[in-house]
Length: 341
Ligand code: NAD
Ligand code: DAU
Image (tube, rainbow, N blue to C red; front, side, top):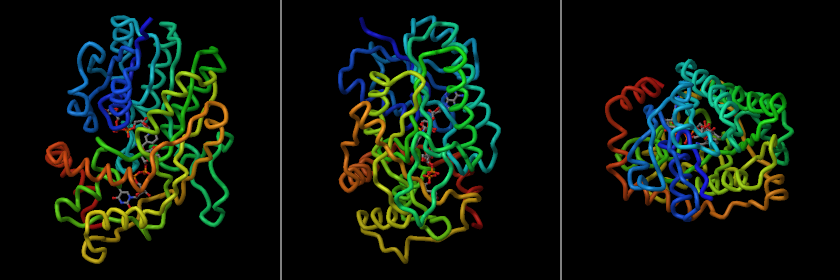
């Protein structure tokens, strides 16, 4: 029998790529794409997918009535929970919406899932819940046993959701799963995040703002690999477990910037502007993804050197998509975030 999946945050970057992947692979699921359409939610990410298999419902995960109605109306079996406020810099400008959506919204969803006997619930967490790693010990990486030590209001709110999931498993024995992934890149990535911001700024002939000394390290994973890992955990993961997901692809922000400049044929001196660092900026993230490989057989399939080119080409081919975003409120945000920095 075809299952019905409620996908929260389905109009965002990773949620829409997840829905796209399931449709492309002809997976036998009906998808209820549930999204509040905040500044980061975009119907253009989903429009070509809507039809018999994919239905869109506009709603807020913090609203118990809206969540329960969607579950009842569509007889939802399983939930994949992406919806979140996701940008660290915005959480530094104001943490209220982060606590509301990422903590309270997750609690509302868990309670609804419990009341309606949802058969599986996957919480899309992040590697940022672990805090930061030393630069001078390259062998040290985040494992699922690493204590949660979040350092930004964003990561603290994601850790709040993460430990709520843990507590609902232990207290109510619910069918809960957690994934903790590293930095994603790919199509439909909102152009406030490093890679799409830098690619689109360069297409506009603008400089790119590199924080601090540019030596912070992130472990980059192509978004389709993350979506594939989530699907794998949903199919075969053990309830109550968390699974790290990563690309084994640590790079400094300088290296990322050099790669983008080279692919776009732009000189460093003219286009890179070092700016004041992000407050509390985590120095290094790196994922040990041994558990998901050994227990569930998942490994990344995309190589960074080719997937970053595919990504840049996507922004070249979809100028209207990002130019529509980089207007109005976005420009106000950009000014607040970068002016005088
Ligand atoms: P995004 O900001 O692109 O999308 C978030 C989506 O959630 C948007 O469509 C937005 O409208 C929706 N949303 C926000 N608040 C909502 C609410 N109250 N009710 C319903 N919908 C709401 O984020 P993303 O980069 O796609 O991240 C998705 C998830 O993956 C997040 O939980 C994030 O923490 C996690 N994650 C992201 C990354 C990454 O590199 N982007 C890595 C690891 C984990
Ligand atoms: O690690 C997973 C996390 O990755 C996710 O949980 C978050 O939702 C996602 O936004 C991302 O967080 P980061 O803070 O790592 O991503 P961001 O693209 O904002 O920044 C990546 C690195 O680039 C970071 O070290 C800060 C730096 N940076 C970022 C911006 C926006 C710059 O140097 N300049 C910039 O303008």
